[in-house]
Amino acid sequence: MLEQVLRGPSDANINFDDLRRLLQSLGFVERTRGSHHIFTKTGVPERINLQREGNNAKAYQVRHVRAVIVKYNLGGE
Image: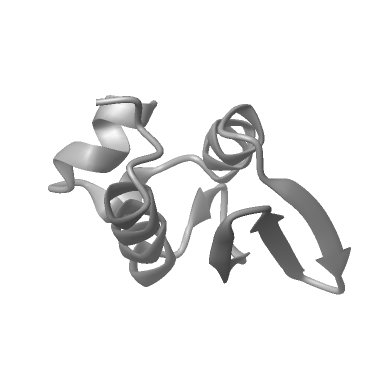
């Protein structure tokens, strides 16, 4: 899943639950407020907000997840 998010060409086709699990595996803590799933992580000042669009995450939110992973070197590479 990490590779799929980092590659980027299919942002609109990223499964919402898979993206949630990826963030959790990277150490993010999830809090839900209505339809918004908000992820925070110690050492990362940016919050990540996810919402469903059918079974998938919204494409612009997938791009934000990618930017945070790259900016804070969370992918282990």
